[in-house]
Image 1 (tube, one colour):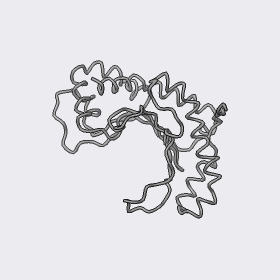
Image 2: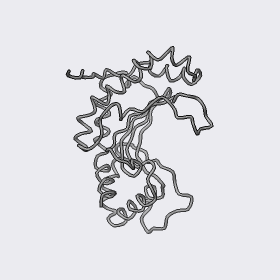
Image 3: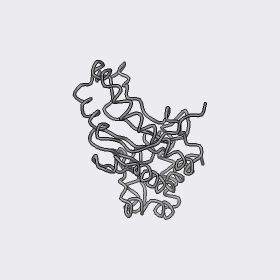
Image 4: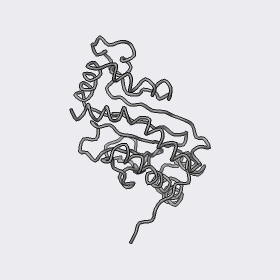
Length: 228
């Protein structure tokens, strides 16, 4: 039987109301009662968005996983070893990445939504030290090439550099521009916005495809550094 094609028509105000209410009523009886809202207003549009973004992600990297059942996060929290015993997340996300056993060491794309808005970007989120050492070495080897790839992203296109910074700066002789990139334990570019009408339109998928494509040169660079 042919699988039904999902159509993304945007999120709805109910998507964000659900997250807002969940912050106050984060327990199983309330969630069970409102599970149809979760499935229709949160899970369904997230999976539909993945379907619509699949061609753009395939064009960026044919090895990226675009299976909605793997790409969309779970709302259920693992509370076995956590002091916080609330059973449900008050945010959800999609993450596009290659299928790997050590996902932390490979660049990936993401979009996160919560009651307050959304954030999206691309980068290395929990890499091992050797991965960041390799990135620093690549930047130092050809800083002009790296600057050419990244300068418009944080200038013209207004992406923000994120990632936990080192407490002790890493020694290097690079100009100031590069310090914001190499003095971090992880590195990613992101944008963050409050809830707005753009989220409620089918055009949001095209917008996200465009934003992700802007980041492709840096994605390719991070992949190349990792694979060398």
